Length: 203
Image (tube, rainbow, N blue to C red):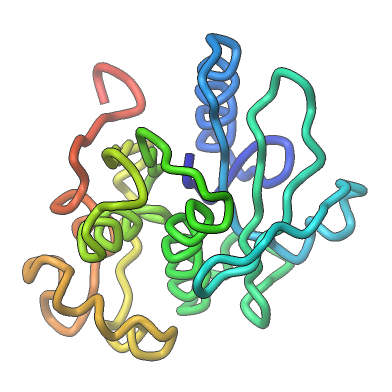
């Protein structure tokens, strides 16, 4: 699971509850479920015990103390991008969630683990399928992108790809997701994911 929110560590609304519930239900059925989200600055003050995990090609991680029967939770380090809030409402969000997408693939390397599915949630994780496809798709079996709230699509000036060290993504992102000098994270992910689902049958 690649996501921006996971209860109780990071939550602003229903996204956290949906991802937490799904991950827990799958783990209870015997699946090996691992969750990756950004290491927001507020997590240092939650009392959560973290331990370092070996870095991938470009990312560093911490693991939240495991609870028996629950999915394992990992946090990708944000460095200077770490903010006290989950969302900053400016270009730093682009940097945070670009770091999350890169981290999703790097975590597979760091753990020497090839998941059957990279399940990405909303625009925050939508560049993960783009990167997975652009790098040959060797780190996971398939990608799934679930839409929770299409009212938020992660639209930024295209320069954020350069500003946050991912200029090579310009060639990997579908042209209609880079229109008018802007990049739309969600639209890019919709083109690249192997499967798109919605949070409910009627959404």
